[in-house]
Length: 596
Image 1: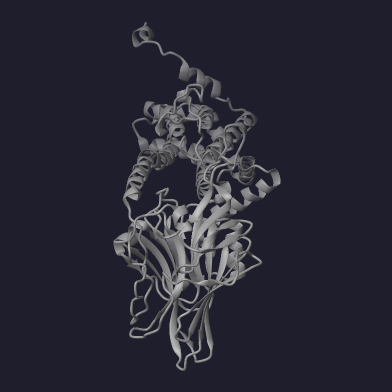
Image 2: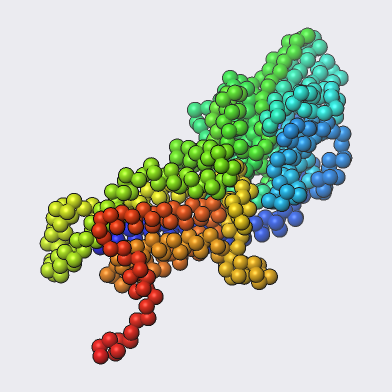
């Protein structure tokens, strides 16, 4: 039994370390970094990125290098003519100066759970503090004297509004025989199809390189947690997924994953993302960069040269995604548009083979019952059913160990001075009684991967964002908003984060405490202290975790208690719960009184 408990303690302490790191180290770091970012953003100046340049080509003249005083978003939107964007899920506009997509709002998502709060702003014009936009263009070989559209080019539009049924084509004539077009089409969700065209009416052929870029001014607020990537991202051919943190590209200045004819690149937040994807089979060279003087992070691609003969036309087609990272939608885009590895825009992690199926099961149950919280409770039951034979065998073995506990104590007493013989005698006892001494660890080992898979799903999927449960839980992806330290809202005081100890964490702690008290108390005083205080530590640490995860843990504990109780009774083993509870809270007598 001692070996069994030591193994269990090792597993539990590993969890304590992992959870404690988040609570005591990561949490304060996140708060500090958010405060620093807020101060930095107040002092930043507006700036613009540089367009990518092919090897041997000249830089684009005057390419967005100037700085200006930051404008408000409304002022920047009003400063130039625009083509409105209006779809069932997106609103915004295309800037006719520069031909940029720099104004995107997501109609289906709001900043808070309050249905009257503002919708999510994704793109904002350059010159604003949160400038974030997509731009396109052409570059020519070094020494070529071709007049190309630039950041200040004023385009004319073929339509008044971009919608799923009405594409928009922007046109600009360079006055020297080349007419440039930039056509935008959008589906009913978040995918743009962008076609860059060139019409050559000169007497000589022209060779131009198409590019697309996503530029973002300043490092945004991030979760800054190791289980989630936020920053620059892409999938490049055989090299596969490339994830570049903001700090990493800031230090490297530029990162080039290599040339490919399949893949995509962009910038991702926790729930939102923007990406560029050249049509599959089109060769492109992706790049991630940071410009310290302008504080611009940029993901861009440069395509192969498009040769346009006299009297002919040339074009380059690519996709622009700007929206919410909805799982089924992202998967559908990968399948229908043949975008290599687009599903990896959502950070499923190394254990995607477990996290993604977990999401689909929860999502299926949600559509069945209409509540993600109830879906989590049901998936917990399903997991219990799947592992029931293994858990049942484990609890039966644990019950048998309790039946032979007197014999084990006799062996330890008989061979207390000879550990080798003591272990040999215990092994013979286990063998004769068909007991697995490590069986008690199996339920915990099973729970750990499921716990982290569910944690990942709750943390990274937008489907869980602002998903309500019952009562006071309005967002399963956020921590329980109540706390015992203001009597759950009865006292008008907002405690600091580390004192947010809500109702569900308390329920979880109680169920964990009861589950531990189902077993005999350890004979080792040190182990007794650990087992007594472990539920308290877990209660405080899990208080900052998503409420959905805490609800899962509490419900899983409750099911385990019921399962273990039934099996113990069937095996004729005494349930130690009430005796252990009594001993825990019983006031111990002073040593002198005990001697008397």
